[in-house]
Amino acid sequence: MFESLQDRLGSILSNLTGRGALSEKDVSAALREVRRALIEADVALEVVRGFTERVREKAVGAEVLRSVKPGQMVVKIVHDELVEMLGSEGETIDLNAPAPVVIMMAGLQGSGKTTTTGKIAKRLTEKQGKKVLMASLDTRRPAAQEQLRQLGEQTGIATLPIVEGQSPVEIAERAVQAGRLGGHDVVILDTAGRTHIDEPLMVEMADIARASNPHETLLVADSLTGQDAVNLAKSFNERIPVTGIVLTRMDGDGRGGAALSMRAVTGKPIKLIGTGEKMDALEEFHPKRIADRILGMGDIVSLVEKAAENIDAEKAAAMAKKMQEGKFDLNDLADQIRQMQKMGGMGGIMGMMPGMGKMKDQMAAAGLDDSIFKRQLAIISSMTPHERAHPEILKHSRKKRIAAGSGTNAAEINKLLKMHRQMADMMKAMKGKKGGGLMGKMMG
Ligand code: GDP
Image (tube, rainbow, N blue to C red; front, top):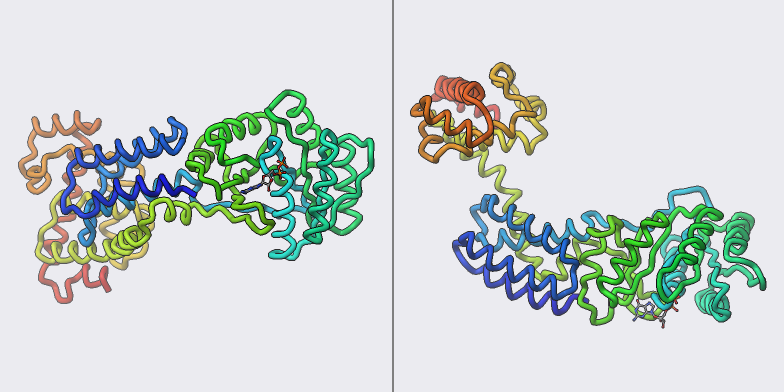
């Protein structure tokens, strides 16, 4: 699964990772290739666009950690966006409801619905010790109910006895009833498929859902059908509330686009993937693991993660040194503000530091609260590097330019500068005090 995409992305990104410096042009060129690779993998165009846009924004704005190369940083950003696109945390079947929990399986004919019903039943029985009842609601294909019965025999899982002449809704009601009476934890309803979505199918699904009140409605889609699978899920979801997707035939040589677009297009999580015809060929869908598999660059990703963990400590130490030397310019202030944002805002960070009450008051007096962090950062980033290092040169005309660039006004800029001056003065006053004064406490 994902082999060709893996090859493509692998070579594009490994081209970047070796280099010491990256220009915006390098990143753009690489992203164009990433974009092409995703489109060729049959990922929906709108998803590809959003993806590359977000990667670009992050890559351009990213601070490169000292111990990693820029290209490695880009790999990490691509990886994280991929995880996000695949659904972040990963979700699995939710059985948190009064027994019997009803799981309704929906999908087109031949998508692997019946097989997946058996796989899920087997998994819940063997891995979670659940007592499961399976029922086929397919009254259109005479062999369908028999197919499920045989699957039950083969896996040792109970199936609802077949009663000729009942409608799908009647079978669903009987299944829930039998589940309740028989003390089953879970009842899985294998509904009838069609060759394509049509109105009668949707009406039937809605009727069954009304009669059986499913806790999970899983749409089974064939990953080999690519974008069709995604569009199918979208249409289904518009008519019946789908709670999750099962993508089958992930063992095939599909291009992977369905798996990659599904979450972004439908807003529904892929909960399971089918990876073969055998009854145990069913896997949970873990976005991070899948992203690792697609990129095949797990070592770089963990390298960057480790570096990021160290960065806060490195920064704090560098800041302490600067403060002790009595240097504290607007770049440092911007760093501080960003750090505070990360640490849960002003209340969070100040609350953790003994002796910081005074600074907190001063910042509050200067009008710096969490809601205006963003404006403060905009002001600082609208300055030239020279201005940031030498705020004393900021006179009227420069302030006017900065106000326009940051969408703020002169009063806000003055407030920020005043706050910076007070903080810098305070730091100077502490300079040379035994044990680093405030910093000693901060770092201790
Ligand atoms: P239904 O019509 O949706 O109930 O589809 P079935 O469950 O009868 O499956 C149709 C065919 O697809 C069967 O031959 C299954 O063995 C096969 N199948 C189902 N899931 C998978 C899968 O994940 N991988 C592979 N390779 N085959 C699968």
